[in-house]
Amino acid sequence: MKSSDIRSKYLAFFKKRGHAIIPAASIMPLEDTTTLFTGSGMQQMVPYLKGATHPKGTRLTDSQPSFRTDDIEEVGDNRHTCMFEMLGNWSLGDYFKKEQLPWFYEFMTEEVGLDPTRLYVTVFAGDSGIPEDEDAIKIWQDIFGNTTTARDGKLGFDPNIKIYTYSSNWWSRAGGPTKMPVGEIGGPDSEMFYDFGEDHKFHENSTWKDDLCHLNCDCGRFLEIGNSVFMQFEKQEDDSFKPLPAQNVDFGGGFERIVAASNNDPDIFKIDMFAPIIRIIEVTSGKKYEGDNLAPMRVIADHLRAATFMMGEGLEPSNKMQGYVLRRLLRRAAVKARHLGVDAALVIKQSIPGILEEYVSAGFLKAGQTDRIIEVATTELTKFGKALDKGLRELEKCDAKDLNARFAFDLFQSSGFPFEITEELAKQKGVTLSKSDFDAVFQTHRNDSRTASVGMFRGGLADQSEVTTKLHTATHLLQSSMRKILGNEISQAGSNITPERLRFDYTFSGKPTPDQLIEIENMINDTIKKNLPITRQIENKIQAIKSGAMAFFADKYPDEVSVYIVGNVEKDWFSKELCGGPHVNATGEIGGIKIFKEESLGSGKRRIYAKLVTL
Ligand code: SER
Image (cartoon, rainbow, N blue to C red):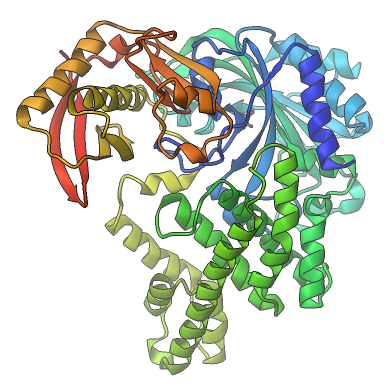
């Protein structure tokens, strides 16, 4: 089935069941939280799963372009991609398991047309004092008309048993119950797997060949295609779990994987979203998509698709934050292209129009960007090509005795020269470089230069701790107070929040006096004492900005935007900003703040720091 048909069928299916279709969040969270990329559909839902009222109601659905930095190294097999779309549906204290699981099954079998004999499910076996999910087991038993349930999924697979329990069936952005930080939300989940069948014999060929094959063994025979999380708990300071104000459903379906299952072909790169890119690589390299070419071709296709999407959202390659990840994707693709004897710039130039067309027609990206993106990508790849050549010359000159992990790291650090290539070339000089030595040098360097942002490269896990959320809302109060006291010339130039403090960069031609800083601090603390409500609304971007909403990088936002309002939503609000959250529900939750530093950054930019205090 065509991927665009599956996306539309999914949204229509849930719309028919009372869900509002909401716009996807940007793949790069626009305000500075501690996550670089949107890693799942639920990321924009966190405040609502925690109890805030969503303006569009209690049943929501979307398709969310997502990116997981942690998965970059996994790409190359038949099923991993670092960018994917997640089909989502949410119940915010509305329906629960007995509605969700039959819908999940109905969508996969009736709409996508998957063969029920190939579908298997997993259910939470119980862990950390939370019992086995008996309700989910009963519901699945009714659906499959089969009451046999394997109580420990790891004991192996039996084609006649449809339901398997695992203690790992728990979802939070941090992983299992014990891994969840304070304030993180999570709950038991139930996953569906598609069985590509014995014939594929992935297990026999894999590193798992000596273990029992089972649904979760990750050998590739079974593909997880969807996950219903029953979002019910919030982790507490004393490691216990507090029930959330309501029992929620957070469903995420792996869009590209569902398309692959609908083709009954375990190779995700054969679906219509990837096939044209693979074809371009085949034609430009003169090589076939088979054997040893599979992995490099998959990496190129995946990375160039993700990079194009990021550039479509306005990102440019750089050495910082998201820009650095984009640079890494392009460089990794370039290295793999060189292996295949093809120029990555040529591949991306030919692939960009098709990739953009797909995402423009799905409503994720603005049209009319093709030329600009081709220009950005080819400039970057040409620059990198030169760095590769320079690295090659240095390697040639290098004496075998100096060719070690440190040399490989310096080459990587100075010109982005990849370890894989140094290693190949070192072999020709009779030197074997060890990847773990290289990683150790890399790690030492990383530890030495650890900054608040390094943790963000872990991807997927936002710090949604209570403290960070309070500081995030305090940043909104700070910007509004500064504009009220110093004038509307103040505008955001950046921000960074850690659990210890907030940091806000702004443009201002003057310098705030010590009295003005006290006035700003007092205004924020007065607003905190008033305990004003904080409301999120989805609004038309132009109207939101016209109504006075502040927007950092306004042109990066989609037409429909999420807006946070502190105070009365109709008029005389204290603050209104385009923002993806999360925020506290009322200003009183912040407690109080203290401004402890203010300084010039030069060129009309200044920086201010504040921390939480008890008033
Ligand atoms: N949040 C869950 C996941 O990412 C389900 O949407 O798998």
